[in-house]
Structure formats: C-alpha cells, structure tokens
Image (cartoon, rainbow, N blue to C red; front, side, top):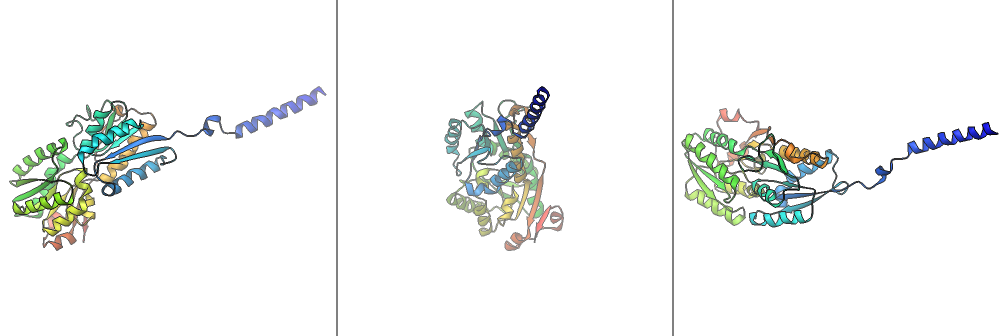
Length: 333
C-alpha cells in the first residue's frame, strides 16, 4: 500500500506541475499599464492630420495602441501662439507620462513648464542654438527629438527659385513674427539673398484668411517676382489657403514641405516631415520603455525631397528650365 500511495503522490505532483506550467503568471493577468501621452501642436487638427496620423501609425507598429496601453491628450493652439503656455500647463496638471511637441515655440514652452516630464520634439531647426538641448549627442535634461535643418535648407530654396526663374530679382518671404526659430531663419535667409544678389522682402503675416490675404496684397505692392514660406507649423496648417493665394496672384513659389505641393503648389524642397514624425514615435517608444531623454541623441533629418508640379507651372505661365527639372526627385505632370 505504501508503494501505491507513493505512485499516486508522484502522479499528482506531475499533473500539478503540468497544470502550473499551462497557467500564465499572476503578473500577466494584471491589467497592463496605460501610459498617458500629451501631444502639443501649434496649428489646427485638420492642418496637422497628415503628420499626426503618421505618428499614430508608427506608434501602432511599435505596439502602442490608443485605448489599450496608451492614451493621448491632444492639444491644438489653432495658430494662436499665446495659447501654448495654457495648453502646456494643462498637460502638466494631468501628469502625463510624456509630452510630444511640434515646432520651436511649443518645445520652448514645454521645456520651461517642466523639468521632470520627458519631452520629445518632432522637428526643430537648430536645437542647440535654441538652447533646447546641450548638444546633439548628449541632449541632457528631460528633452530630445529630431532636427529638421531648415535654416541650412533656406539657401538651397533660394538657389532653386533663382535657377527656375533666371530673371528673378525680388523674393517675398512669408513668415510669422515672434518666434526664436523665425529669427534664426531670417538671419540665414538675409545672408543667402545677399550672396545670390536677390532682394528679400520680409512680409509678416498672421496665419488666418484675413492675414494671409493682406500678406499677398503686400507682396503684389512690393512687386515681388516669387514667394517662399518660412518653416513653421502655423503656416503649414494654412497651406491650402496659401497655395490658393499664390495661384490667385500668379506668384511662382517654393515651399518647405511636399504637403504644399500635394495641395497644388509649384515646388517644395525640404526634409520629409512624415518621416520625422514616424521617427519621433521611436523616441517615445524608447522612453516609455525606460530610456532617459537626455541620453538619446538628437537625430537630424536624413530624407530630403525636391518636387516640382508642372500643372501649377502651366497655370501661371511659367516654364521650368530642363536643368532644374533634372534635379527634382519627383515631377508632377
């Protein structure tokens, strides 16, 4: 009988071990933590949809699903820079786990608002010059992200305009005053215009229908022969209206992003912002998994595109020289 009892005892233990192996550990049965992310954007929801969607899709590919393991509090300033401190303070009060910001001013406001909540900027023209980070290799503090290199690209845009319009002498620059990023761009553009022997007419505008109409009227009065836009999320949000006005006033124009050409614009040269937004999702992923922002090097844009829309050129009676067309990554016919 002792042997029989021992036989059943061993069998029971074996069965228990098998059942235990099939059971998931207790911690796996617990509800997965939902991280709370704040998303701060200076423009409108509709104007930023294409970029926000790129970020969300990349987050999903990395396993971060809204409503499952992350929640996102979106805050849009609707082109009103003065709203940024209030919107940022709201995200800080909510005790979000991380803040994603787009553009120079939101990044500066967020950095001032918190030294503990991690911050990821999706695009900044000169992170070191703007004092967002200590260095590109070692950002330090609670902030890191991606650089769009816009100041360096402004010279190239002016060169393209001059090559596309050989007799070009006067260029109108649309920009929104009040931001440090804009000041950096202006400095670079003034030097570039001087080197190319071009007159740069600086036209300050508000990113709303009335302000933009006034800006184009001013450009006409100043007798500019072409238009270029400064980098900025607020102007990007109004890209459809800007493209419509360049057509109305028959101005050749070069823009900083391909999305302007998607709306019917003539030319664009610049970083691929969709790629930058996708890349920012990888920073968020690493930080949520434990990395410190200050240890993650700032990544500079690596994908650049030069796009020409010949349909837009035809509408304003402009013939683009062959040597310019040959340099384009994409020509829309």
